[in-house]
Image (tube, rainbow, N blue to C red; front, top):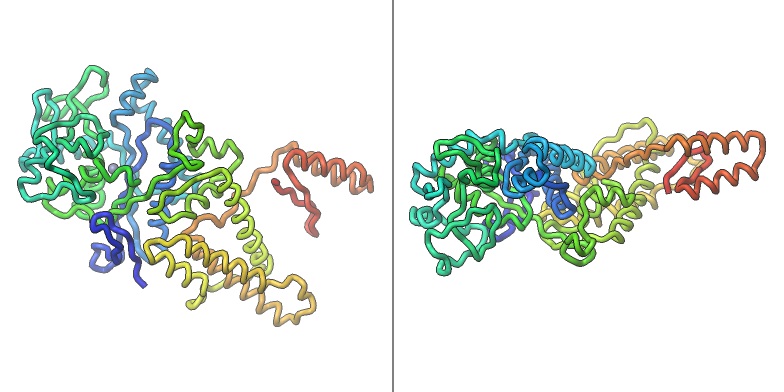
Length: 478
Ligand SMILES: [Zn+2]
């Protein structure tokens, strides 16, 4: 079955067919972070969504080239550098490192290429020169270069491919210099910003004079350099549709005359505790804030993956607690299978119902709710199938069951290559807790059960349980 995706460009669900005539290679670009602060949970929803798309394409046998830019020069960054009284590289480097660590914490596959805007100034300049040569850009009196929407439309190009714009209300030639603006102020936007006093020493020489690139041109230059003038997929949060993505199309198609991107995918907005995130409401969370509350990257990833990417999602702390319970059910099921499978290596069965139901769901514009339903139906069925009391079963039956368990694990691993939640991160046991556990073992050895019980209670108070298993005591975080 073929994958269908909602393309913002056509405003409809379309069969996904890559530009590669062999149907194998896929070029995918996702707008990366602007490294001026720690990414918040709304940003992370988009990156986890991009990871889902990439993983699912790989699951379907495509070879994906995943590109994610690092915006390390932009209006907010200039302000941040000025306020922190530091250098551009030092300021952005700190947040870039944090971002890449967080990406790992959420078990997102690392993009194959992570181009930085500041390392692509020559490509940006040459793209602006092409736009000037084609007459769709012009130099303003202050030395900045702007994209002319009027000239672009005048040569039969369509500005407003991703959303409808009302050009009657627009005054020709009006300009906007800042990187962010609303659709009410559709206007010629800046490609190159002439050096302003507040930019300090952050500028580059160019044929248009000293200055720095606008935000939108960065993505056009870097995506086309790596993926070519036309590529398959461009992703981002829905807040980027206008002006960022619309401007990317205009700059790219204005320079090359070729269609820029075949499928545009946009992830919906995220609310926290039912409200728009804001620092004053106390519902603004970076990933690090949530980790500090004791949640794991895996729990956060799971919760972000429970909602369909095109639906506004209400992220709550209660939801994270639910994620913990749901993951525990999966973990219990998988660990029972591992125990039963022992050393057997499983084979993925061609008619495996978990894998086929899972894929059928994701083929339908990534219907993740139906995909999770298939997973939990499998957990229920597997728990029913697993029978720990059959000690009297024959050796043959036991061997068969071990093989079935191994095959079931193979199916789970295939599904989890997309979900990326299966590997439970081992919690490191602090030395203090190990010392307690050793003292308890000692007490048990000398049959001092009163003492061993007291230590067990103390461990519980510290958030750990101790379980006596045939292989010795096992420590678990509550
Ligand atoms: Zn972008």
